[in-house]
Length: 223
Image (cartoon, rainbow, N blue to C red; front, side):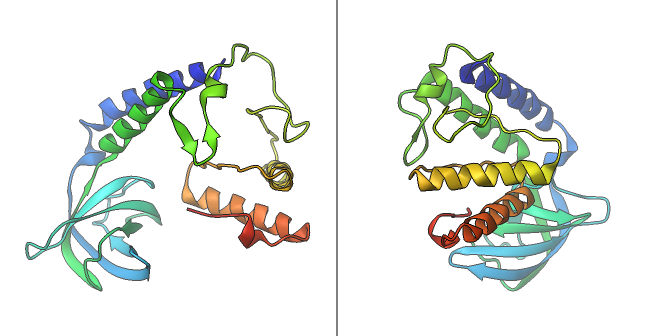
C-alpha cells in the first residue's frame, strides 16, 4: 500500500463516519450544563463542564458553548474527561463559571474538515505541507508500498514503521529515533490518537533527551 492508497482509505472511512454522525445523538445539543474556569494560558481557556447524567462527549470533538442570558456563544474542543465531566479548551472566556448552558457538539463538521484535508493532500501533493518544512509529495509519489519498513537508521526512509507489542518498548524505540532525528537536525511531527497519549509520548521523549545530555525544551514542542 502506498501513502496515496493509505490516505484514500482513511478519507473514505472518515467520510462514512461523518455521514453516520450527522444523523445520530452525539451531535445533538446538550442542555443544563454547568461549568467552571480551571485555568487560562494566553488566549486559551480551560473549562470543566458537568453534563447531565448519562450524557458524554468524545475527546477531540469541537463544540459550541451557548451560555444563558443571551451571551455570545464560544467555540472549543474537548480535551478529555471522565463520565459526564469533561475538560474543554475554549478560545474565548465565558466567565469564572456558568450554569444552565447548552453545549452543541460538531463531530460531523470535524470529520468533514478532516476528510477534506486528506482529499486536498491527494489532489495537490506538490503544494500541501504537513508543517513548515515537511513536504508530502515524496510520500505520495512512492510506487512500492509492499515492503515492510523497519528502523535501521533515521535517514533510511521517509516513511518508517515502528512496532512492538510492549508499549513501553515501542515508546523507547520511538524516543531513540526522535533523538537520532534531532542529532541530524531533522524535524518530526508526531500525531497521536488523543491528548493523553501525546502527553505520555512527549514525556518519554523529553526524558530520553535529558538522559542523552541535551535540553529537551530546546527540542520538543507540544501543541
